[in-house]
Amino acid sequence: MCRPALFKKAMRKFNVAWWAYSYPITTLALASTRYAQEVNDGVAHAIRLFLSAFSVFVLFALLLFTAFHPKLLLSEDAPTLPSAAADATTFPNYYSSAK
Image 1 (cartoon, rainbow, N blue to C red):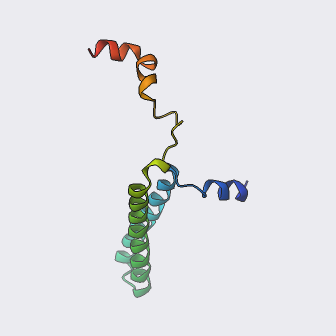
Image 2 (image 1 turned 30 degrees about the horizontal axis):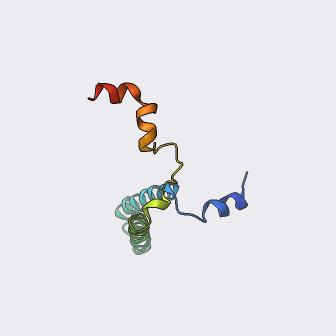
Image 3 (image 1 turned 60 degrees about the vertical axis):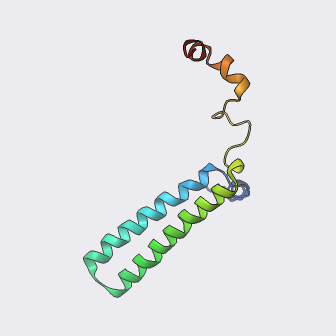
């Protein structure tokens, strides 16, 4: 099932899920490198060069965007980032034994 409206809504704001695009692109670039080595053809080498450059571009774009907009990765109410006040009440055994 395809939900283009949901996809458009998710793409409006930068979040940590955007990093998922880098893995398949890099994997495709590595596969094209192996293919170009086996086939030894000019077109295969051009595809390898394009996919490798695109993979590097996506990686650096994600790195730069993450560096310049770190607060957009996770919202303040994200369940993975407990607040400092909630730490002592959420994990009382850890904080009492650490003293």
